[in-house]
Image (cartoon, rainbow, N blue to C red; front, side):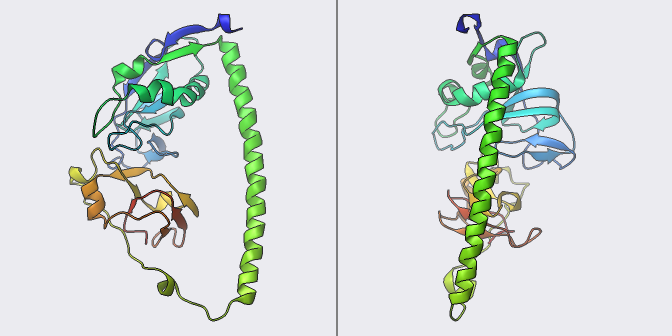
Length: 275
């Protein structure tokens, strides 16, 4: 029953701590590093142990526009980037971290984004984050809601896997038809203009600090569309990297995992491992 829910705030439910790991300079290692992108990077050390909901403190788009693509659920031993806050449930607060993750992800635009401040660099303070209201059901109801969401996610994953299998079959058939009917083959150089990106010197903070321009590396190129990157650079950093790629550009990896590709859906710069 809704009358069993209690109205509280994120600051009452959690201790809120800013991360300490610089995204660009943290040494890789065995622990997840929670960043603004959809997948964690790695770290040689950890800052937190247990469960937490991690909330980015900077706008996803920048340029004076407040936005937030996602919050993150983390558990175990993990590190957190220094532009993200970890909300760790207090002992006895009666909150399930996974429920809190789903709750904040659902209400992020109404309750988190609206608390971001600034003009050019839009950001969120720990103080303002602590005021986010939370309508909290009893603990057993929280866990029931989490289980229901997990069941829906499983059904979605199964449907997506079936759709992907159908797409693979369709693509294979189309490629076979192309192979059977093509005339004289052209090279990639005949049909496109090619250039490589660049990596601004890590020692020069003006290329990275408070960066707003997407900057793709090998991890971001996963044989599909690419609209977001794990890392960002400043406008001057993007220029140093050779400029940004427009929508419709195809990225191809040249080192490490050679030959992976991605179709650019949002303007972004690239490092020197992509063309």
